[in-house]
Image 1 (spheres, one colour):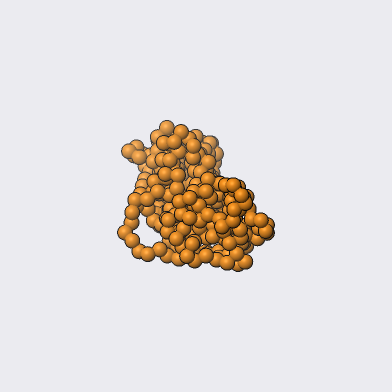
Image 2 (cartoon, rainbow, N blue to C red; image 1 turned 90 degrees about the vertical axis):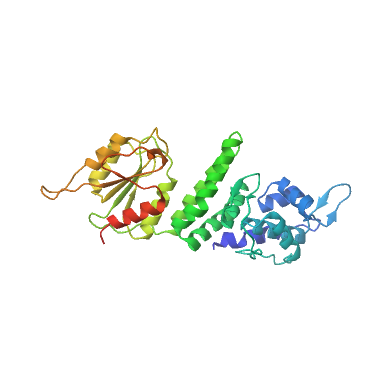
Length: 334
């Protein structure tokens, strides 16, 4: 865990003035909205002890430490009511507030359909999904980074992507589609941090082996790269040399990249049917190189929902990350 992550909680309590903090000042220190602080006060009884006349309330160090505990617990996916109960009964001291890397596990209970703040429906999702969703909705970079890395280390990249990250991304996507584009910034924020966590959790590259390289690229006009980034990380983790070209690679550049690398396989990602070019995939599959009598062609794998229901002669299709990783790993000679 980074020094910044370790010290994030402690900084909110330090230097609290003798007269306490206003609700707005507490919210800024914790990185949450003032309405969140007020809701925790009115709904869960996490309010301050001090009053300064009228309706004004001041938050003392012990009050801020209690809210810090609440932030840390909800970031792990714990339901707010349970997190508030723990924050009240297991209060850290103001001088040395707790900074749990992981919250105490709640009592076992059957999965329940739940919402992760602001009405973001996650259904019967893993607990990690709810914590990641709450951190994303709060735009809490420190908590989000920690939770993503924890999920990748605990479950492995493939399971973390399939069972934790994708359900959370889909829930965020449904939210902004149904709310007039209000949560686009949350989706961008979450995607950016997933991308960063992938780079931090895997080696930078794998040494080349003749005929073992896999080329990963989005088709022209396609800019959704995150699924390819996960595939690149998973292959790198397994020792497969990868050349990742990202979004919207022009046709001429894709052809040149394939000729220059002589790959064992080429994986082409298309998010939408409008960008899934069958002629392009067939052209890449028909490319050849090498000496006469021993010429080789790449194995072409089509990936993404854009190819659904559109079989491309001379290519193969993988319907999920695990299948794609297994197929491409098999093609890379050791």
